[in-house]
Image 1: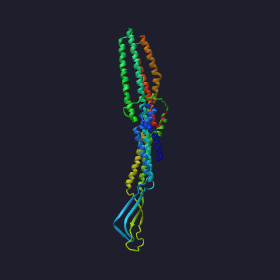
Image 2: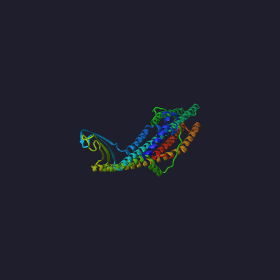
Image 3: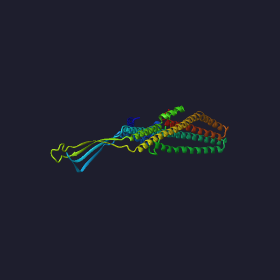
Image 4: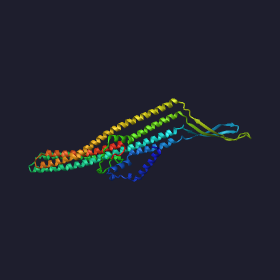
Length: 426
């Protein structure tokens, strides 16, 4: 992508930001409910993303600087002791000189700056998709915290009901006092779990505020339950997407182009830069009358060039630049290998959490609910003891939490896959 296109994209982005300037000024916590709300807020306010955007803008402004010639040099000379010539004494000398790089040097410098701007753009894109992954990860964790709190509250009410059942049976001499004590112990344990879940809300919100660049102790409402997405993607297809779209890898491609440009620029050091200038000398009238061209100011056309004399130094610079190309290529290969390996492992985790979601949602949770109902009926009729009822309640609580944890993990792993692929997979 050339620098003009990048600059146009920058301007479009600035227009979009300015159009939403009013929303930035609002501490619109009440509007932060659904996942798109959080993503939009983070895109506009996250400090790291803003820093990367400014870095990209700065890199764009380097391109016109690379295309420009060096400033012309102006010289002035004053003859302390006048030089007497046939046409008159010389008093002042003024000159101007413009240096022109050898053919291809400006183009090489411009290509390097343009490639650096592309790298900065890809770094900005990489930061953005990593930010979105962080937002999604924290959002789904916040959703899980809400669901876990609600499940704990529901089970707490259920245990209170079981305690009441045990108390009624005790009063009718069909249960023992230890049943009531067991119920109270379970109530105390679950109340502690519920208290921990409620106290965890503030650290989660504080983490979210850091990502959103909000005041640390600002409050956030409970999020809306998101729509869950499922994908079915082959590993080979995922690898293709990573190689084609991953911004970090694309940024490393840009680094390779920068290194290649430096090789071309190093080769140009073997050729001289040429200067063209003009000198003007002020000359007074000759002291003798009748001198031809008396007082005529001479104009001098000037040429200059540097002499590329230290060839060993220039050759070393070229070899250094070529070594940097190889280094960049190897670095890109290493990052690509690690990214693909990580993606394949995350895809496994995603598919595994998907299987667990189906297992808990379709089998274990419904069976645990059925077992709990049957155990309560059997306890009331004296067919099972109170421990069996408590075990059934514990099992239901565990499976309910495991079900929502599997769903949360599933969506978090999907967000990681999208970050590595550089595109939405939904």
